[in-house]
Length: 155
Image (cartoon, rainbow, N blue to C red; front, side, top):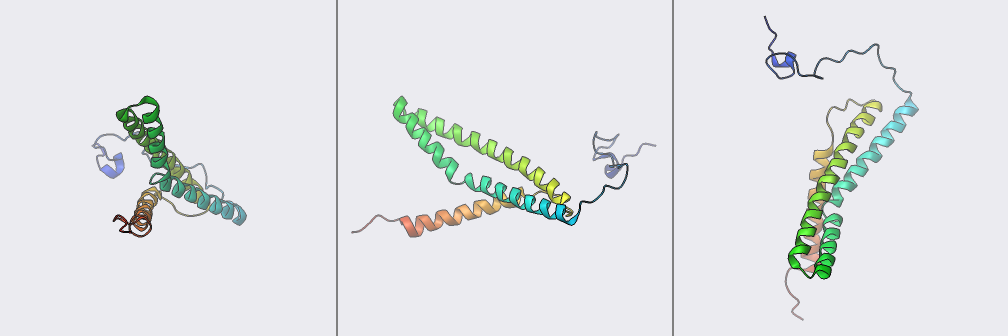
């Protein structure tokens, strides 16, 4: 009789997906000392800050830099469409590269957090990305409504 419970087969009905079997350790891993766990906690915090900076850069500095590069390309090529295409492709490329780096940082953060003695099963990237979007929206709203002002000057 085949075992076809999805919890036993890694979600498949027949057999087991490679790499989804239970983990069997040779022995109980040794825990680091309190100093080592504290250092791992500090490193995890630094990695979390780096993820936050990467995500925040997606909402301001990177698009502005690509818009500037697109304007330079527009000036040198004397083609509005060329500048727009360069800026658009650059923004998309830097978005994918930045999210890839943030995803890798998030995996490292989970491992370092586990080494610090915390039971960390999922990453923080979705919350950081969402939080950075809210922060960017609030900052843009302050700039648009308070600093710059949506209406033309009447003076």
